[in-house]
Length: 432
Ligand code: GDP
Ligand code: IMO
Ligand code: MG
Image 1 (tube, rainbow, N blue to C red):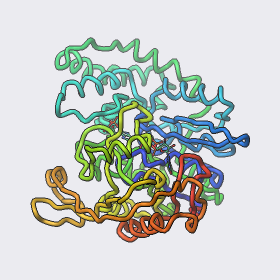
Image 2: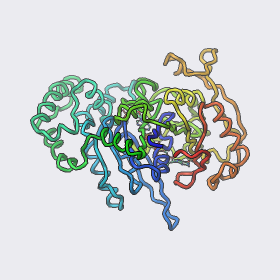
Image 3: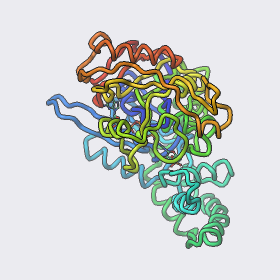
Image 4: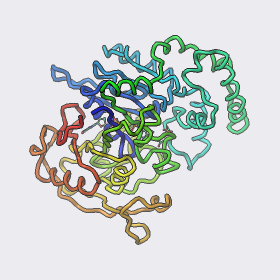
């Protein structure tokens, strides 16, 4: 199984980190292909003595936690170099081998002015804000598309770097001072900051596209790990309430240099309910005690910003959309255990938009904003399912829930998560 892509099916935080970690033992390379430190992946690893080690990763691919795996930051990622070294130092102090990390020479770096611009733009937008993570992601991708970005390779030639920073600041400083009433940045300070990382990143930097294609030629296995998720994708998500990269499976190719013809499997991670952080439409969102139940039971607070996540029921319209847009071959249904103890579980099967039934995502974003969920009610279960290790171990109603959502979501539920730890998993079809 040479190349596998893992992506999120909903609005992020589906448990991609755990799924990547689960597959880690079977792969040679794990590649982050989009986003940056806006992502937050919590991975829980149970030790031999029964205690658990918890890791929170942002910029680094979750595969870095598996010994033997080569972690790769692909060309599609935007890199905050201060965060990179903060994370690496933290992991090293906990005994994780970080020596194999590779960084694409073509990845873009997040400069100070873009972090600042992300924050002031949001403040300026007021009620029209996106609710970004404030990490400079949007402005850095905007610079990339605008062809005024700074790439990792620019850090190895001071005169090229200086020229590019000068060009960018000519525009940015005008924007900061004249529109946002903020102090601008000096070219010297930005160049000095970026250059301070050059020697440290030099041993990691390479043509990661070449590296990965050669690994595939040798029959090695590559896992492409998406940040964010389908509905946060800049093309296929709930625009403008999205991130600024392609978080869908197409982004795995452009963000890594691995062509679509070499990808064998597309695994979408989908929560047994739905969550969202930040602004934007969310048809099954709950504003009552059920929402609090999911938030409390599922510990739905952001790994990156600590914000409470908005919670709602499973939305099969979204799952079908994700299956189609990404070409999903397998779903991993996570956090089924969070539904333990509910009397009845609503599942959204379609939307009602002004009296018209929609089985697919409405073509017009405004319709999606006021789509009302049409629910099918399924019976819940009272048992604690965290000890289940096979499908047969699940109570009959939990089995029926999985079968029902599988039927209406467009791809098989191959793996089920029944707890945060790696072993709290039910494997129905092996992913490797
Ligand atoms: P990611 O951004 O997609 O990697 O997801 P996050 O790590 O931000 O959020 C998922 C959270 O759910 C993490 O705290 C995980 O430890 C936890 N988690 C993952 N799978 C399961 C599961 O099956 N059950 C439970 N209870 N927690 C899970
Ligand atoms: P993982 O990888 C959930 C959301 C932000 C905001 C929007 C744009 O952990 O699933 P940005 O800073 O990217 O410009 O913010 O996208 N967002 C996420 N929500 N999980 C994430 O990552 C997210 N990354 C960005 O909350 O609404
Ligand atoms: Mg997350």
